[in-house]
Amino acid sequence: MSLALERRLVGGGALLCLLALWEYASGRLVDPMFLSSPTRIYAAGVDLVVTGEIWPDLIVSAQSFIWGYLWAVAVSIPLGLVIGWNRRAQYMIQPFIDIMNAVPRITFLPILVLWFGIGIWSKIAVVFLGAVIPITIATLSGVRTNEARFIRVARSFGASPLKLFTSIILPGTVPFIFTGLKYGAGRALLGVVVGELYASTAGIGHMIADAGNMMQTDVVFVGVLMFTIAGLIINAILDRLERHFERWRPQEAAR
Image (cartoon, rainbow, N blue to C red; front, side, top):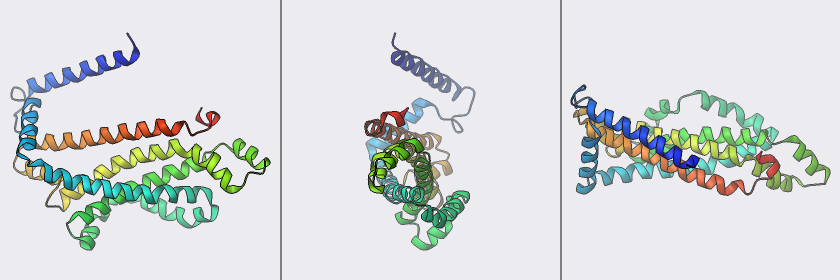
């Protein structure tokens, strides 16, 4: 039996056992009002999809995540590369990065609501703030950890700063960038949830809040499952992209 097949069988068996235990406990050991069962959650999810009730909320949450996350990526990767590569830029910008990293970005939500209202823009801003700092820190860390011996060899052969950056620094930073992208995606999803729980009239987070207020635990779990699936899909996409860009890196640096 291959390791991949064994991993799937063991992991799948453990998951099925957990679901069976959960199904048994709900209604027998725990009141379904506090812990819905997998079958009830599945039925609630199918009902939301068939009736179309979930689609407007899903679209709102997807828009908040996509725009906020893409803007964070567009800002943080170039910013991290500049800070890591240029000493004066590091001296100028690093203190602000450290301050923003020390402050929970969620605390800015009331101010963002005052600035942008309770519409989609405040949630996009929360998602952006949640993702931009982790990706920036991971990127600049990648630039700083490039092996000095490769840089010395390149300089000894007269490589220009641009050639040095594109041939050694940037390829060597790829794993750090993708680590930041994965962590930033998780923080971005958290921003979507918190933004919609706190100040929103639509979205999966808003649906979860409404269902919780009405003690609809099955609908609450449907919302949680939606965010879980989204996180898994995003990580799978980033993993595939990372494997693609691994071919770009020097083999010695990849070890």
